[in-house]
Image (cartoon, rainbow, N blue to C red):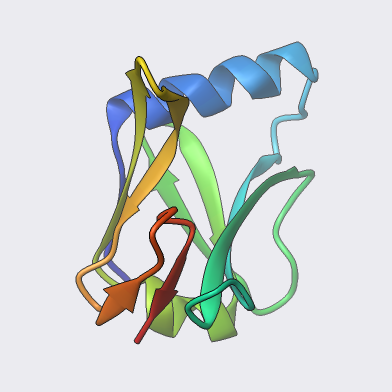
Length: 109
């Protein structure tokens, strides 16, 4: 599976994990869930370890957990962390999306 998380995004996640004293098996779960104004939305959370059936990826020392359902929608996605005058947060560049909402938090395939 091809899923890229930029160095900037990895560093932000690692800061949070360090502050939470996450264990050595911990990682970032990246999911696609039904909902949002365009049909699907992204979800990210720190978890202690992978679940059965997860694909486990390593990006610059950060473990990523992706479930079977989400995998089909996350193929080729790039996740970044940006800071601007309007705020800061994670962004998703999804080449599979055919549309998105105005706020950028949900997408259509």
